[in-house]
Image (tube, rainbow, N blue to C red; front, top):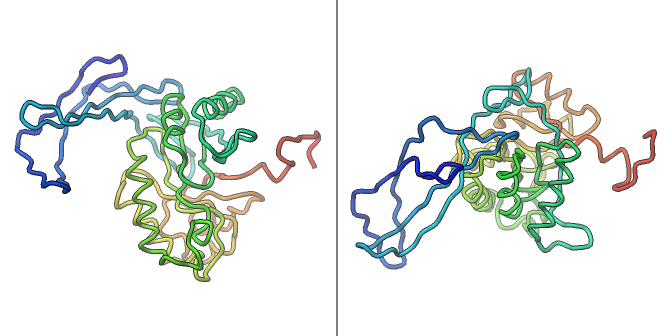
Amino acid sequence: VFDPAGHAVATGLQESQIVIPAGGASDFDQSFTVQNPQRWDIASPKLYAAKMVVRVGDKVMDSDIARFGVRTFEFTAADGFHLNGRRVQLFGVNLHHDHGPLGAAFYTRAMERQLEIMKDMGVNSLRTSHNPPSPEVLDLCDRMGIVVWDEAFDKWDGTADRVRDEPPLEPYGEKQIRNLVMRDRNHPCVVVWSIGNELGGGGRSGITPERVKFMSDFVRKYDPTRPVGMGCHIPGLAEQPNFDALDLTGWNYLRRYATYHERYPDKPIVYSESASALSTRGFYELPLP
């Protein structure tokens, strides 16, 4: 393990021999301790690097480097978001994946420029509305000190590539959530996993207590360290136990969070969308209506 300056600070050695059959796989645990770690923070995003090497005898067969950060955080119901022991006011933005006239293909520099503009406006948090981002987005947020609401789905219907509600939501949901969480869980910028956005209630692909629970449990199966939430917009759904399995919720527009806050006063609320209803995108005539 190397610290932000590139100095080796910890080593883990797997002493037992691992036998991996051809075309197969094998799991093993490795642990190490970093003394007096430098914290990853929005003001000072310190990143460590873990170098992994696979050898057969003395021959190096493969190697990789995983970057990670050390930080503590929590969302509270009464005092908002805390990072490394202090309260931080989140100033967030939802950014879809495309870049205007550049189209939907991903360009790292275009995203970096977009985030630079956002930071200059005061942004310190990003919601990946409403799908898994390109992995480079999280690399940039790690490096630039931007915390992330990482969203797996918009809806759970055709928007999630389930044609006429097939394949079945439960195995399909676990597959997609597993892909997202296992890919992104080493990023210190990620502070929330979101299982969806503005879903309707019931039906074949909408919100029910059972569906919210198994989707939330899929996240916790692969990462029990971060809260699970979703973007909500129908206050009446909070009158039933639809959101019992969530750690927090995001609410979109018009003080729609009020019912949820009455039912779950001890659970945090994030204002996940609040401003796009005021103006056409790119045109802001003041005073706003």
